Image 1 (tube, rainbow over the protein chains, first blue to last red):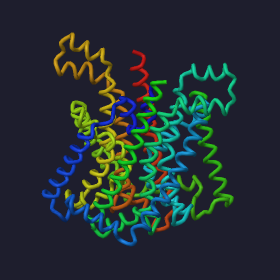
Image 2: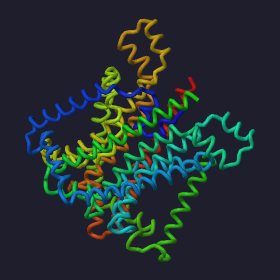
Image 3: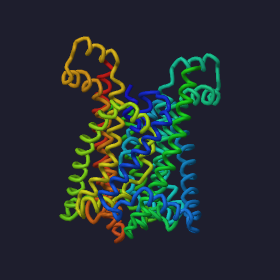
Image 4: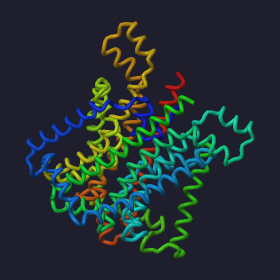
Amino acid sequence: MPAAQDADPLVAAERAERRDMPPALDTVLLIVGLVALWQAGTLLLGREALPSPVATVGKLAGIMGDEDFPRHAWETARAFLTALVISLVAGLAIGLALGAHRLSGEVTEPILAALYSIPKITLYPIILLLFGLGISAKIAFGVIHGIIPVILFTMNAVRNIRVVYLRSARAMRLTLAQTAFTIVVPAALPEIVSGFRVGFALTLLGTLIGEMFASQRGIGYMLVRAMETGDTGTVMALALLLVVLATAASAALLALDRRLRRHALAS
Amino acid sequence: MTRAGWIRLALIVGALVLLEAACRYGFVSRDAVIPPSRMLEGSWRALAADETRADIWLTLQNVALSLILSLIAGTAAGLLLHKATRLRRALDPLLASYYAVPTFVFYPLFIVLFGLNRWPLIAIGFLFAVVAVIINTLDGLARIPRAFVRTAAVMRLTRTQYALHIILPAAAPWFFTGAKFAVAYSFIGVIAGEFVVSGAGIGHAIAFAYNSFDNRMMYGLIVLLFVLVGSVNTLLSLWERRLYARRAGR
């Protein structure tokens, strides 16, 4: 089944093996190892180029204590959550429709895959011209990054539903809505959640990129300003914040994913 | 061509015609979007000018270098991680959230590391592409059927024989998927870097055209880039589909 070619590599790994959660000890060891590597890098490159882990955490605490920070964080959160809701809801609806109607899926899939592979950052002038500076441009940027993987995953999930389920639905004379909500969505749910995970990461990336250009507020704006002034301390602190937040959210979705899959296997 | 292929072609042509008409009759502001025919003129102008040709050539070289490096490093790291099961398991959530961080914020760090030349950009492309290669290598290795591994043991294959006759053919489609994503991600990483911070390359040329209100050149370059990346991706996808089909057929 050539599903992997349409999917993102992020999730391919999970689909391959339904592993259990890593033991807490290993996670701790990994974090310790990464921090040690980072510290070694600081010693090698100098504090100016790569601030040490301790200094970065201190810097981050300083940034978060700043009175401007809640405003920036709220701006990013608002843009990101709006973009995420649009990506997930619209992506799910489009994916379900394209998955259910075979010909439409075949027609649009290569177009979507090609759109997924192009560097969407170059669309920023067009988005700015269409939406102007401000939150709507950021949301649009988040959505164009996040929605395509959600559509592709959902579409494949629907296509891979076992024919027996659909035949049973027909035998029981379920209506279209009943089939969608009692058969299609539950059967495709694990893969849909995988798509949501990729969509989550890319929507965040898109929103941040949008903020870097199209905004005077938000975490992306703080990042680009720090980059331009060569303030590596702030860059590292904000990058750390993003990595921690994204990884926490990703781990939570991964846990949900695993529970759903186990559930699907059990029933 | 299949029926779906014809419909797709008609859809794309129809969308272009619609856009052309909408621009010509003023439904879309000329300042925002220009008609596709004008975009093509811009592409032609970009290809005819020496400086933009140099920009395109530079970007292609950087993408190629980033691609080669990420394929080598990603495959090696994937092979090692496959052995280190505990490490890989602990790394999982990190690999999954990796693409949420805009990698190009580390550009200043790379300038300190490599100096002000092409290597910081290649490093960004590399960072973007390498994780996709690692993930797909792991995926391919995990999917080698257990019967193959047992057969290899029964036949007492040496390590080299095992690698050449079992691992490579069985995992080839996934390695290929990794390579396909590495191409796309190298482009995305290098061009994002050029766009934000560099003074040369296609990304920079697009940003420059935008800043100097040269809409025709800007759209021309974007169209060139999309056609280039889109057609490379489509070719690789077609080839990939055949690889998977052959594996499934065995």
